[in-house]
Image (tube, rainbow, N blue to C red; front, side, top):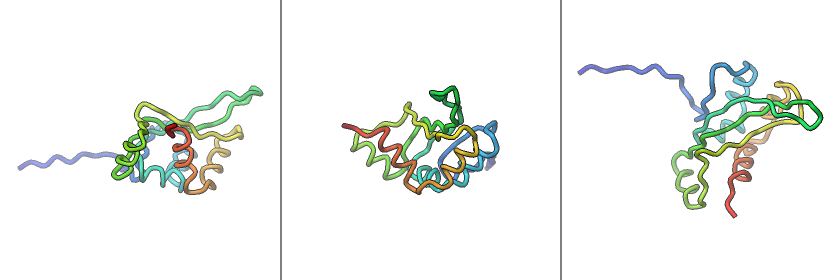
Length: 124
């Protein structure tokens, strides 16, 4: 019997991101407790953009898309009627630098991203 080994990047958080992200944003995704807790319940893609501000200043943001629940969370979301697939949410800051976004997500409470997700996709 021939066994084929597949080389893949481990994604312990359940959050996938591209290699071309700035280094500080990769560090943020890896080390943020809020993103780690979100990644334990959901698989999602993370990307990085700048949002245009009202005073001609742009703000860094993380876009979290293709959100798919894991395990029991899949059943809970199905009962609540929440479907994050094809949806997206963004996490931004009032700061204008990547370091501001990093600082916000590193110092955020563990439930911050989960609460943002629930607020973005709650059913009425």
